[in-house]
Image 1 (cartoon, rainbow, N blue to C red):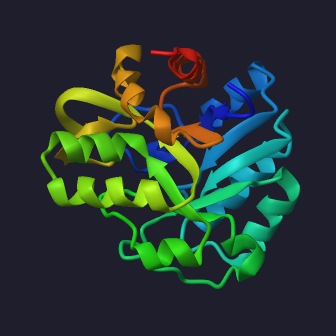
Image 2 (image 1 turned 90 degrees about the vertical axis):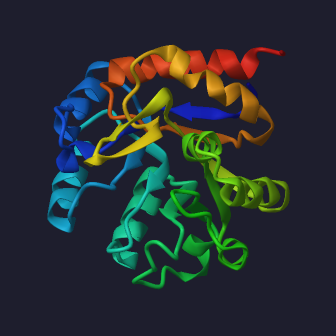
Length: 240
């Protein structure tokens, strides 16, 4: 595997979810139980007040390094500086700027490690060149492919051959569209809840684009994420 990192993640969508999922407090207890010192962090579901509460809680755990953090555009330079300095962050990521325009200037140093994600929108190539590059969400990419979204797939095929991939997200792909975590009225093939390890098999198609940092973006408990991590590492090591 070389230096490639597959990180389990402290995710926060449970705060916005319409289904019963373990909150970040429960996941943090698991992180401490397993004595994990390196994780990824997804701040997607938390307001500034709740983020501050989470930061204080993380400082009391075994976590020493957070190489990859999915940030929100309401986070200012001071907040990013705190995370960057304290947890040796190698990659921040945001959704495409068309979807969530930046509210703050983070400066040259932080912009160079800020990667834009293909969510329901593929990031603009000019934006990618201005910042660190691309954060590939493999499940979003595969999900749009299964939906027959030719334009989306063509854009991604072009970008991954041209733009630096600094980090990536790993989620599940279902056999048929299922309700998404934060809005049961919407259905997608990609999911932030893993039901079976076989829902990660689609990753075999994308091995050529695996970056050094890949984070498991699942709302599943940490114990289940650790199983997903092992499964993904096996996919990586398989020569087929």
